[in-house]
Length: 327
Image 1 (tube, rainbow, N blue to C red):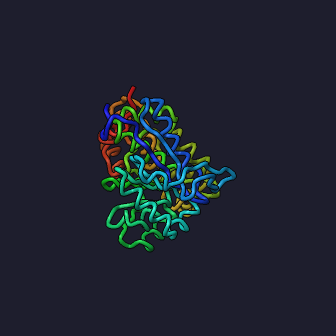
Image 2 (image 1 turned 90 degrees about the vertical axis):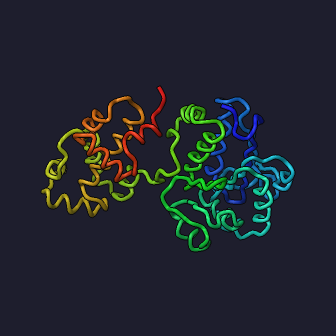
Image 3 (image 1 turned 45 degrees about the horizontal axis):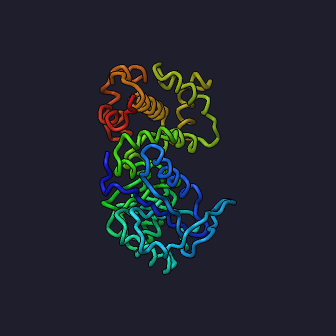
């Protein structure tokens, strides 16, 4: 599929600063670099900083960079601002902001990864726009820049030509979405397979993993064995009485303790796990929705439809259309 802009390689410039988060840069950078293995000469990539030279990251590694000023009169299709511990200082540096404004004014697309959104906001590019950053920083971004319409849940947001992404690995999702925008979904899907990463997700999908949320809420790990058992028995009767039996507790006491530890009821947890399993089958198989509903313990496709609407606000058929992995 031809490029939406032109047939030349697109130049992607990553602007970094001291104490940049390494994975913010490396994850998305790898996406654009490997896109050239799927579609030859798709992208040229460059990492730039205010002064050029080696720029320290939040790890033991530093990044070689070119001077940002040298790119003011060169073609840059997409400018991406990385995040990290140094993003707050960068957002208060008038030289950095002026450089971002000058570079972005010449780009067709501008984006940020994680707390790089603070730099974009300081430069005025997020005023009146929807935006997202790492979930821990959303409140601070909204308080500091009240003109920005901060959303806490999406993995990335596209508002016209301005893109923002949630924390760290969400930059990979955003980069894959940019590849989709440039060269089409088949190219992005092939690239996602090559990277062995989650298939291309729309920006509206949550930055929160249901499995990760369970582990976070139940930090003690008390119910990890039960969760494993549930995931292997989704088609079974999973009422509270059966779950309580698995952990040798009375149903009443189990329901109380489980809710205290995981911040959700047993029924809600079971529905979430069944919905996750159904999502995987919708992505990876051609099974009819009715068969998926039966296999995952919903009993009928109407209960599955209601569950997906509650958790993802999407129907099974719409989810499959968006995420089905081509054979």
